[in-house]
Image (cartoon, rainbow, N blue to C red):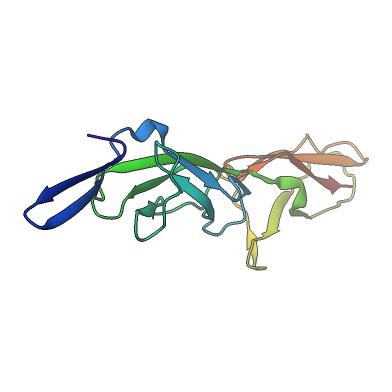
Length: 178
């Protein structure tokens, strides 16, 4: 393979052949390579794609952008620019990241949020709601989106329940029990 342009003659016709054999030197420049989890599919916009010789390529003519089938969850994903004429020929690739959302942006509801002291341990639970990227309020799942620490609720007083982000969420949120 040649990384430049070859010209050859067959009879009276000239053929121009572009080959992109050295995929490790091609580059994809993204307009943004970092997103924050929002519950929706997120894909990067490409600023430019260059071959290994530094030539700027045209989407659809020179390359096709291949993105993962799903890029919703927090994690690292790979975008590939492949030859428009030979989809198995990778010109360049780059990673983009979806970071975990801050659990602190979620609303924590403690139910019941208070009880009367009688010397017995009290039980309570939490419901955590969060607004996704389309503005829809969704209920988060314990052990998938967060873990919760509920202290022993025996003595009269104020208690703080601590929730720690899991999976697509990071950070902490708090609920109160009185």
